[in-house]
Length: 453
Ligand SMILES: Cc1cc2nc3c(=O)[nH]c(=O)nc-3n(C[C@H](O)[C@H](O)[C@H](O)COP(=O)(O)OP(=O)(O)OC[C@H]3O[C@@H](n4cnc5c(N)ncnc54)[C@H](O)[C@@H]3O)c2cc1C
Ligand SMILES: C=Cc1c2[nH]c(c1C)Cc1[nH]c(c(CCC(=O)O)c1C)Cc1[nH]c(c(C)c1CCC(=O)O)Cc1[nH]c(c(C)c1C=C)C2
Image (tube, rainbow, N blue to C red; front, side):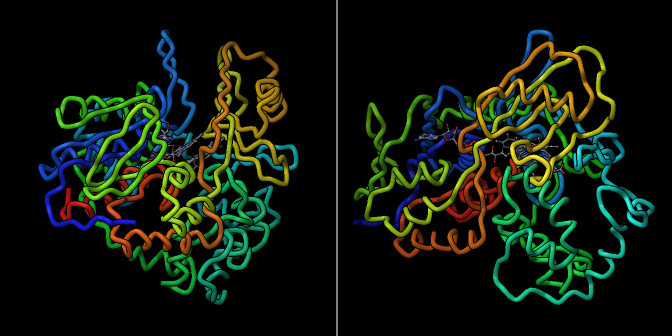
């Protein structure tokens, strides 16, 4: 196998996959004059991947993928800077910390909805479904010895530090709401790096979080990010739906004159060549000096040549979850409670993840609508029939960072060792949130061009 060494300016970069990761990488590439041509190859008929919104003619917006993006941290500021740069600031819909959707979050346990405790008084009292006040567990956490291993399941980590009940109920539910996954298999190091690092840094979560982050990535807040701090945003969305973001990036790329955007262009194989890479699609072959892959890990593994064997194996071992999102619309205000929604721990119902009061998750694609409607009826007492509904099954939509994921990702030094002109970005590797994926695109471009963007 021949590998590519960089001794000349970058001419053509191919970006594989036109989800938010691929589009973000193309946006950052476009900001640099060092790249003369950018080719984006997307297998489906639209760009945006899981950022997918239905806009009805009456103005109603239904999200089938992400519905809320967090403004905090370097990755949150980075996305807001991009949103501002794209001229979308006027379309941002913020949800502040004082909003009812931030304050009222529920768990559905033992057949009942329970509001999660908030504030000091909530932590001092016993609040069902928990059997004792949470504050003593948080205070005693300081005395718990630091873990010794280099990774641990989320469940084992939280049980050890905060007790089994919090792991069984709270963390189990959270892992289902964010990873559609099983906290007994998911890695704390890869899924919740701020918790893992807090223990390593401070010996305990409390001290580690007080000491602050040791993150080296600095992103200065632009106007919109500054506004988010001033107005205490907990999360934000866009008035015409989250899909407005990939749509606007696509327009920006089209207008740049340097980007070729190809829909219905499924990548079949990539092969190293003397001048870089040969990329084979169903109906043609293109050449590129560098590839940024924003494909799901398994899809990339099947496109790589067999000579990339250790990398192929590691990519294949990254599992993904399939979920269904059911959007239901009802006439009038029928909900007995107000708030963000409720999560359901696996002990209550393995097949239901939660309800965001307009979306529900199920593992089987039969009778999804019936099951969703029944859940809303039994959990929330809503007897009325929905006036509008939509069921979408998302195959392999969310990667599962199981224990040892950090080692698996470490194997990508195969790319460096062999001087492959290949960058891996997207949700398969280093964070599944929209912010993480956009930031992975930025980091790859900065590493490739050797400069900030
Ligand atoms: C239901 C759901 C709810 C979510 N909610 C939130 C949320 O509230 N907040 C949040 O921050 N995040 C949320 N996420 C996570 C976030 O949306 C995803 O992690 C993120 O969109 C992944 O982006 P990506 O570009 O890495 O991957 P993808 O969106 O999967 O993009 C990959 C692209 O590659 C294309 N492709 C596949 N095979 C080929 C091929 N052979 N050739 C060319 N192209 C190919 C695909 O069509 C796709 O467009 C949610 C995810 C889901 C599924
Ligand atoms: C239908 C399945 C999914 C639901 N959400 C996701 C999937 C796969 C994925 C997801 N949700 C959130 C994030 C971003 C996390 C981040 O780091 O910013 C991702 C990748 C946000 C989120 N959604 C829920 C919670 C508790 C969070 C964490 C952020 C926050 O606290 O605001 C809850 C939730 N998500 C889903 C449901 C049905 C649900 C229930 C209330 C859908």
